[in-house]
Length: 246
Image (cartoon, rainbow, N blue to C red; front, side, top):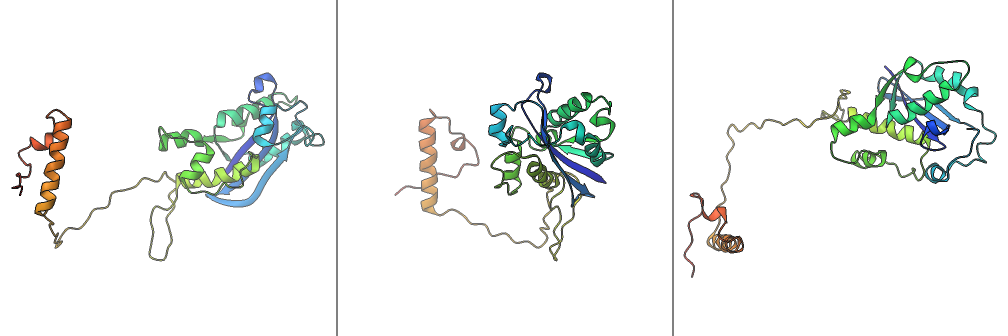
């Protein structure tokens, strides 16, 4: 199984407003293992980069002046991703930009979906961790992945980090043997309850002493007073009998 973890950096947020891709970074997974096969390319967008975007990724107009245009790298890029499953965090953003670039080419190469299937790890993360932050930094913290080098966004670095996040979300350690090996199922990790063999198990019962019973009753009475007589523990039949106070 060949998968490509992909990220892009852009001049802004909206391809419909003429924003373009300025960096593509990809790393390859074969059978869920990272290979040394990577694709990384800076691209001259033939337009200015928004100041807000530069603050995010640090890529300047001057740096891109001598870089190739998208039309120069399109064939090599498509050859790299062809037939793979693309793994992207917030896929509609990156795929939308790539498709916009492909559409602008006179050669009519098609759309990303004509070459690859696409898996959105943001959707996956929201399903696994509903109601929580699921951006890349939050996921790194949740899965104990070192992203200390990520002072600025960068397509290749973010693709490498996302690959680790994806592998953690979809596998991780699910069975530990005595030799330290683990089984990787490729499925989201779900903690499974383990049955306890209680046969022959003798449990020691520790009863409260007199001082503890007095302190407990005083606490209940304080709760009862503060709740206008609504302390349910004083009303139950199973309540501990009031000890004799000295």
